[in-house]
Length: 184
Image (cartoon, rainbow, N blue to C red; front, side, top):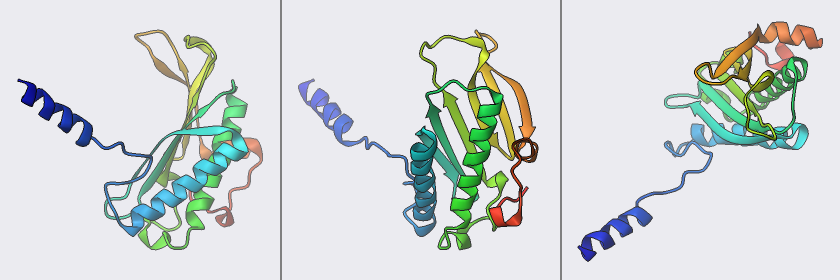
Protein backbone atom coordinates (compact mmCIF):
# COMPACT_ATOMS: atom_id res chain seq x y z
CA UNK A 1 0.00 0.00 0.00
CA UNK A 2 2.86 2.38 0.87
CA UNK A 3 4.52 1.63 -2.48
CA UNK A 4 1.34 2.45 -4.37
CA UNK A 5 0.92 5.74 -2.50
CA UNK A 6 4.59 6.55 -3.10
CA UNK A 7 4.24 5.82 -6.82
CA UNK A 8 1.11 7.98 -7.04
CA UNK A 9 2.92 10.82 -5.27
CA UNK A 10 5.85 10.62 -7.70
CA UNK A 11 3.52 10.64 -10.69
CA UNK A 12 1.56 13.54 -9.27
CA UNK A 13 4.62 15.72 -8.69
CA UNK A 14 6.56 14.84 -11.84
CA UNK A 15 3.85 14.18 -14.40
CA UNK A 16 2.20 17.60 -14.44
CA UNK A 17 3.96 20.57 -15.95
CA UNK A 18 2.69 24.10 -15.49
CA UNK A 19 2.08 25.67 -18.88
CA UNK A 20 2.64 29.41 -19.17
CA UNK A 21 0.83 31.84 -21.46
CA UNK A 22 2.47 30.55 -24.62
CA UNK A 23 1.58 28.29 -27.50
CA UNK A 24 3.67 25.37 -26.29
CA UNK A 25 1.92 22.67 -28.32
CA UNK A 26 3.98 23.60 -31.35
CA UNK A 27 7.66 24.26 -31.04
CA UNK A 28 8.08 26.04 -34.35
CA UNK A 29 8.62 29.52 -35.76
CA UNK A 30 4.95 30.37 -36.29
CA UNK A 31 4.20 29.62 -32.65
CA UNK A 32 7.21 31.65 -31.55
CA UNK A 33 6.04 34.60 -33.66
CA UNK A 34 2.47 34.26 -32.35
CA UNK A 35 3.89 34.42 -28.80
CA UNK A 36 6.01 37.46 -29.65
CA UNK A 37 3.02 39.36 -31.05
CA UNK A 38 0.73 38.48 -28.14
CA UNK A 39 3.40 39.30 -25.54
CA UNK A 40 4.20 42.68 -27.14
CA UNK A 41 0.52 43.60 -27.14
CA UNK A 42 0.04 42.38 -23.55
CA UNK A 43 2.95 44.48 -22.30
CA UNK A 44 1.78 47.59 -24.13
CA UNK A 45 -1.82 47.16 -22.91
CA UNK A 46 -0.54 46.81 -19.36
CA UNK A 47 1.78 49.82 -19.57
CA UNK A 48 -0.48 52.17 -21.54
CA UNK A 49 -4.01 51.17 -20.56
CA UNK A 50 -3.70 49.29 -17.23
CA UNK A 51 -5.12 46.11 -18.80
CA UNK A 52 -3.62 43.05 -17.11
CA UNK A 53 -3.38 39.82 -19.08
CA UNK A 54 -5.26 36.87 -17.62
CA UNK A 55 -5.35 34.62 -20.70
CA UNK A 56 -4.05 34.10 -24.21
CA UNK A 57 -5.07 31.89 -27.07
CA UNK A 58 -5.04 31.44 -30.77
CA UNK A 59 -5.25 29.18 -33.73
CA UNK A 60 -1.92 28.31 -35.30
CA UNK A 61 -1.96 24.66 -36.29
CA UNK A 62 -1.10 25.08 -39.99
CA UNK A 63 -0.83 28.87 -40.04
CA UNK A 64 -1.57 31.77 -37.72
CA UNK A 65 -5.28 32.31 -38.27
CA UNK A 66 -6.25 33.90 -34.94
CA UNK A 67 -4.70 35.42 -31.83
CA UNK A 68 -6.63 36.08 -28.62
CA UNK A 69 -5.94 38.02 -25.47
CA UNK A 70 -8.00 38.33 -22.28
CA UNK A 71 -7.34 40.99 -19.66
CA UNK A 72 -8.59 42.19 -16.30
CA UNK A 73 -9.39 45.88 -15.97
CA UNK A 74 -9.72 47.30 -12.47
CA UNK A 75 -11.78 50.39 -13.21
CA UNK A 76 -15.49 50.78 -13.71
CA UNK A 77 -16.38 51.76 -17.29
CA UNK A 78 -19.44 52.81 -19.21
CA UNK A 79 -20.08 51.90 -22.84
CA UNK A 80 -18.21 54.95 -24.16
CA UNK A 81 -15.08 54.17 -22.12
CA UNK A 82 -15.34 50.48 -23.02
CA UNK A 83 -15.65 51.35 -26.72
CA UNK A 84 -12.48 53.43 -26.55
CA UNK A 85 -10.58 50.63 -24.77
CA UNK A 86 -11.63 48.00 -27.32
CA UNK A 87 -11.00 50.14 -30.42
CA UNK A 88 -7.58 51.29 -29.23
CA UNK A 89 -6.58 47.77 -28.15
CA UNK A 90 -7.87 46.30 -31.43
CA UNK A 91 -5.87 48.76 -33.50
CA UNK A 92 -2.77 48.09 -31.38
CA UNK A 93 -3.20 44.31 -31.78
CA UNK A 94 -3.57 44.53 -35.56
CA UNK A 95 -0.73 47.01 -36.02
CA UNK A 96 1.59 44.88 -33.87
CA UNK A 97 0.72 41.74 -35.82
CA UNK A 98 0.98 43.36 -39.25
CA UNK A 99 4.31 45.04 -38.41
CA UNK A 100 5.87 41.69 -37.41
CA UNK A 101 7.58 40.98 -40.72
CA UNK A 102 8.81 37.49 -39.83
CA UNK A 103 5.28 36.37 -38.91
CA UNK A 104 3.60 37.56 -42.13
CA UNK A 105 4.39 34.45 -44.22
CA UNK A 106 2.64 32.36 -41.53
CA UNK A 107 -0.58 34.42 -41.44
CA UNK A 108 -3.70 32.72 -42.78
CA UNK A 109 -4.41 36.02 -44.51
CA UNK A 110 -2.20 39.04 -44.92
CA UNK A 111 -2.74 41.62 -43.62
CA UNK A 112 -4.14 40.29 -40.37
CA UNK A 113 -7.68 41.61 -39.97
CA UNK A 114 -10.42 41.96 -37.39
CA UNK A 115 -11.56 38.38 -37.94
CA UNK A 116 -8.07 37.27 -36.85
CA UNK A 117 -8.09 38.74 -33.34
CA UNK A 118 -10.17 38.30 -30.21
CA UNK A 119 -10.07 40.57 -27.18
CA UNK A 120 -11.97 40.00 -23.93
CA UNK A 121 -11.72 42.39 -21.02
CA UNK A 122 -13.13 41.47 -17.62
CA UNK A 123 -14.16 44.48 -15.58
CA UNK A 124 -13.18 43.71 -12.00
CA UNK A 125 -15.39 45.09 -9.28
CA UNK A 126 -14.48 45.80 -5.68
CA UNK A 127 -17.28 43.54 -4.50
CA UNK A 128 -18.10 40.40 -6.46
CA UNK A 129 -21.79 41.16 -6.72
CA UNK A 130 -24.02 41.11 -9.75
CA UNK A 131 -25.19 44.47 -10.99
CA UNK A 132 -27.79 45.23 -13.62
CA UNK A 133 -26.19 48.50 -14.61
CA UNK A 134 -22.42 47.85 -14.54
CA UNK A 135 -20.43 46.30 -17.37
CA UNK A 136 -18.76 43.00 -16.49
CA UNK A 137 -17.25 41.82 -19.80
CA UNK A 138 -16.45 43.71 -22.98
CA UNK A 139 -15.17 41.98 -26.09
CA UNK A 140 -14.05 42.37 -29.69
CA UNK A 141 -14.66 39.16 -31.62
CA UNK A 142 -15.05 38.80 -35.41
CA UNK A 143 -15.11 42.58 -35.79
CA UNK A 144 -18.01 43.02 -33.37
CA UNK A 145 -17.89 44.76 -30.00
CA UNK A 146 -20.12 43.37 -27.27
CA UNK A 147 -20.88 44.86 -23.89
CA UNK A 148 -22.17 42.48 -21.20
CA UNK A 149 -23.50 42.77 -17.69
CA UNK A 150 -23.68 40.02 -15.11
CA UNK A 151 -27.17 39.18 -13.89
CA UNK A 152 -28.17 36.76 -11.15
CA UNK A 153 -28.68 33.18 -12.24
CA UNK A 154 -30.14 31.77 -14.40
CA UNK A 155 -29.50 34.69 -16.81
CA UNK A 156 -25.78 35.12 -16.12
CA UNK A 157 -23.90 37.25 -18.65
CA UNK A 158 -26.28 39.25 -20.83
CA UNK A 159 -25.34 41.38 -23.82
CA UNK A 160 -26.81 44.84 -23.42
CA UNK A 161 -25.29 46.46 -26.52
CA UNK A 162 -23.31 45.47 -29.58
CA UNK A 163 -21.86 47.27 -32.57
CA UNK A 164 -19.42 46.67 -35.38
CA UNK A 165 -15.84 47.82 -35.10
CA UNK A 166 -16.48 50.29 -37.93
CA UNK A 167 -19.47 51.81 -36.09
CA UNK A 168 -17.46 52.10 -32.87
CA UNK A 169 -14.49 53.69 -34.67
CA UNK A 170 -16.78 56.21 -36.38
CA UNK A 171 -18.31 57.20 -33.01
CA UNK A 172 -14.79 57.84 -31.71
CA UNK A 173 -13.69 59.72 -34.85
CA UNK A 174 -11.09 57.08 -35.74
CA UNK A 175 -10.40 56.82 -39.45
CA UNK A 176 -10.08 53.27 -40.73
CA UNK A 177 -7.51 53.22 -43.51
CA UNK A 178 -5.34 50.55 -45.10
CA UNK A 179 -2.35 52.24 -43.41
CA UNK A 180 -3.77 51.32 -39.99
CA UNK A 181 -3.71 47.67 -41.02
CA UNK A 182 -7.45 47.38 -40.48
CA UNK A 183 -9.28 45.05 -42.76
CA UNK A 184 -13.01 44.98 -42.22
